Amino acid sequence: MDFGKFKFEQSKREKDARKKQKVISIKEVKMRPNIDEHDFQVKAKNARKFLNAGDKVKVTIMFRGREITHPDLGEKLSLKLVGELADVSAVEKPPKVEGRNMVTILIPKIEIIKEEG
Image 1: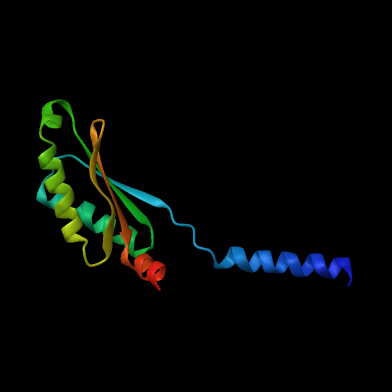
Image 2: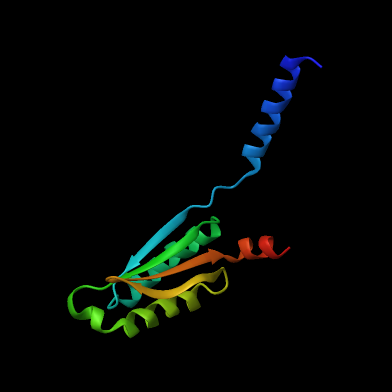
C-alpha cells in the first residue's frame, strides 16, 4: 500500500471524527438571593437559551455580607429556577454552598436521552 495514500485516508478519518464531536461548554448564570421577579425571569430565559443550545448551565447564587446566614433563601431560589427549567433540563449537581456562593449545575435533557440510549 502507498504510504501517502495511507496518511491521506488517516487524516480524512480524523477530520470526520472532529467534525462529528460536540464540545459542551458550561455557561454561567449569576444571581443574588434577593433578586427581583423580572430579573429572575430574564436570568431564567438566558439559562433556557443556553440549555437549548446544548450547553450545561452553572447557576451561581452569590451571597454578600450577612446574606450568607440565610442559605435557605439561596436554595429556595435555586430550586425555583430548576422548577422553571424542568421541561428542558435536569439537575446534574444539586445546590451546594461553596464559600460565599451556592452552585447548581443543570444539563440539557437531550443529553440525558443520548446517555441512556
